[in-house]
Image (cartoon, rainbow over all chains, first blue to last red; front, side, top):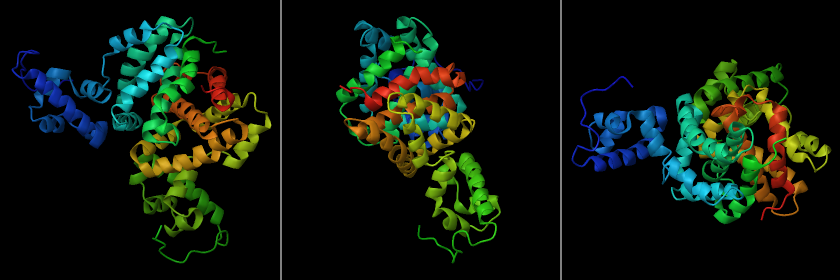
Length: 202
Length: 202
């Protein structure tokens, strides 16, 4: 991003900085959800948050990173997810991935996932964000830790199942999957994700 | 659709009718792909095809049906797919579903699938089309024929894997899955689809 408009204070030195950051995240979630990735501007998001547009670069480094953190918001960071998911051992990791995915996105009502898919479908740049956040930071890390072979393909396969699950539950809202109990889906889908991680692929 | 603008000739009686129909399908694929479901109008599509807008209602009954046939274009109709897929028996039906899905959409270069997902994410009405075409006419028919229990949930689960596969291969283009050989993916994914159709889900 070459558009550093002005000198910005160092991170954390501005009084109320954490509030500014939280306000930007909340505003970004609304504006990206309403207008998609391309339609949403840094200026609009900052105005919604009631702060100067320079604060976006200051706190997030730019629109793409703000999108990643605001829209792909996970209630924990990738390193914490991976540590948490691996704690329970490898044998039912697939089950824990499905449960974590559903409880995370269910808690957000599905609208945030729909906004994500809408943006990915429309914009190559957002596909890069998705690749960076989900694939590289989560699924590839998990597959890299537990797979005996082809961790990259396995990470892609896990991603295919989890993204498809999200589309069917939160975007297309197929019945009965959209309304199914989390634990019923964990039992139905977990073993398939486990096979992608540690099973034979040939 | 309440906008029947004029009396239209009966199907097949207009000279060059088949050409009109083919021209409308080709134009619709272009316009839906460029402008999404909502942006594309019957008038624009008809103009692109060089025919009167009334021809859309005449040949397809309206924009939604035209979208279904043009954008969800399968090189065979749903009844033929199901008959073809079931011909080889139940035991490796999952494998044949994955192969048919990949060869169908690969042949179209992936852009049509991306347009479909973009439209589904943006428009509830298009999710209905997807539900009608894919879920009700294909996956639910297959699951209904081969599943011992819960055919509707099984059809949803198969749909989740196939849609996710399409998003990762054609929209997000994750590496290496986007470039993987069809038969390698058939071996990797087919058994998971088979479990959704006929395996234990609990």
